[in-house]
Image (cartoon, rainbow, N blue to C red; front, side, top):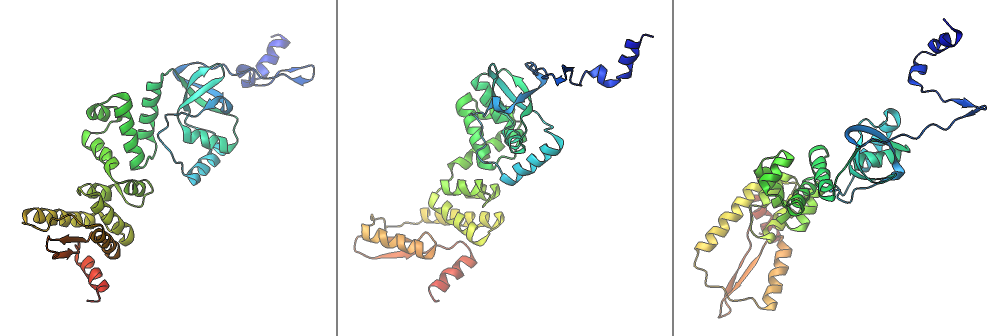
Length: 304
């Protein structure tokens, strides 16, 4: 066996993998640039500086603590799940999915990130980003609803088609979309976790935004359970039905002064107070209550 052959065998795995830098004139040669390969199953290492964020990203908020924890994990273990990008031009990529992983990698100070490179037009970009987030990320209910609505509007999908794309039945899709019909204040409460999806679905049983907002305030103030809210909604619905059946002749439009009094009383009692004035000046004041506890609260305010 020749000396050269023995030396090659003696190098072991390093010789087979060729992972040691070559030394020329006592200086370490610059390692070759990584060659990227397009393909759904090919992982490439891409410089973070070459990646721009996805303008179609449905997620608007990222938990700072969770990002920091992922960043620490990346420092220790590296990024396990590659992101997905599309090539825009030479040395330029746009994120399709994985913004949370990209942000955490930047926090970790890494210079490159593993990625799948895909070819996609803007419509495919939107669909892939939305579906990836809906299925894999912990979107809040409002972000999910907005993602569903975007897919319907921008991809021209019906609810049944949308359900098939995101692996959810039509009723689930419908329930999320209905959240967008609630007043903005309630949508913010859902987004921020102040009330649950169950609370929101109960509030959707009310036609009046004023009633919805009133009970929403009670949920925040008193920490009401979903079952309690459902009971209150049923009471409001029953009272509304009874009022429609009654022959109420006090239907004259309220003057500005009377309207102002009605609004002040509603604010005072945290209830939807109604003033009804007849043509001869007579009338009545209604202060609705939604439960025994609510009645006691109003009676205490009246010093009963």
